[in-house]
Length: 195
Image 1 (cartoon, rainbow, N blue to C red):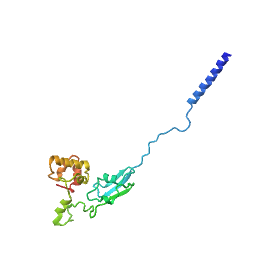
Image 2 (cartoon, rainbow, N blue to C red):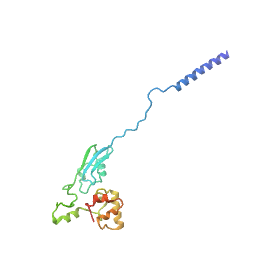
Image 3 (cartoon, rainbow, N blue to C red):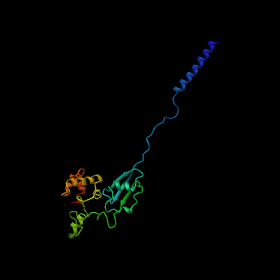
Image 4 (cartoon, helix red, strand yellow):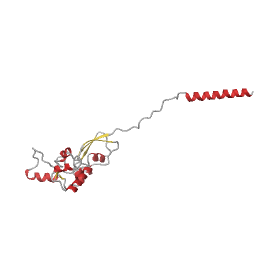
């Protein structure tokens, strides 16, 4: 009787072990879990024009504001009318942001520079108008230098540090001695600066 009990227990243990092996070794049911990357929204594109030093097409993440677009375009020109726009407004994809000029200002009158072959001002006041509206790189503040195309706050500070260390610039070409201002940048600003 004892042997029959052992045999019965052995058979039962065998069934339990076999059931466990079948359960563990069977293929999982259902679809496998696939981890997908987190969805990221495509950037929005905004065309910035008007009273900024570097107009152009800029990309921003969704939720960017008008102030972000102005900062990307180099800030406001001295002739801009910042009070005419809502700097906290949200930007939209495909938007053209036109930064307005102040009263009596326009892109044509913000800097009066005579181009060769044109005669837009009278002979008597050409020199006075041109020199009055150009930025003097020997006396300009950081904010004024920052309005020049291709010159950001860091480069504007380098210009101020250079003139503090070396004295005033003798000719406008000397600005190329400042680290970060090469021939391409000089070509963009040479008609906007004076000494």
